[in-house]
Image 1 (cartoon, helix red, strand yellow):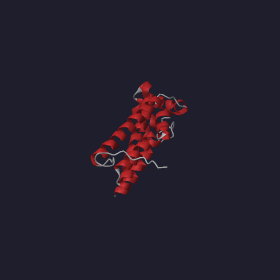
Image 2 (tube, rainbow, N blue to C red; image 1 turned 90 degrees about the vertical axis):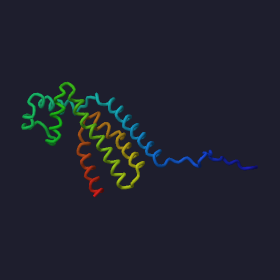
Image 3 (tube, helix red, strand yellow; image 1 turned 120 degrees about the horizontal axis):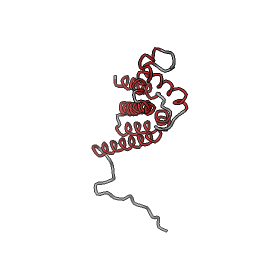
Image 4 (cartoon, rainbow, N blue to C red; image 1 turned 120 degrees about the vertical axis):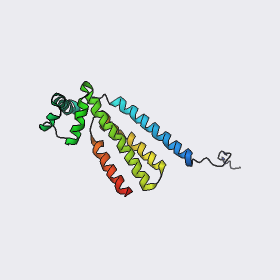
Length: 171
């Protein structure tokens, strides 16, 4: 009995490979799709009212909205003053201050993802690996839930840590 082998499909110019500008375009498309998908997921979760919001953040925002920057002289919060300055801005949005607070963290999600991608690029000199790493970080469920659902600010200090690593690598 004769063995049947399956031949690979032939392309006019040889095997299908993405190089140069085509590869860069694919990387850009991947990044755009990852960021659009990540933002759509975040948009869905941003309206979630967590216990952290009702127990801690909402009273803080009410205090800040009522007294402005002078409220930060009081002892009603346990976060770094730099984050509280950002909450001063978010408190200006009144009834939408929860969304504004979460959007601050979502902004830093973007910074974390880009910094992670740049670190990968500096370490391996591969745009594809950098794009994949950036996309994975931005789409990680814990990153999404931490900022968009719970309104936590972990991405803020993480972004500065990653940027520090990036600058040490580039040095």
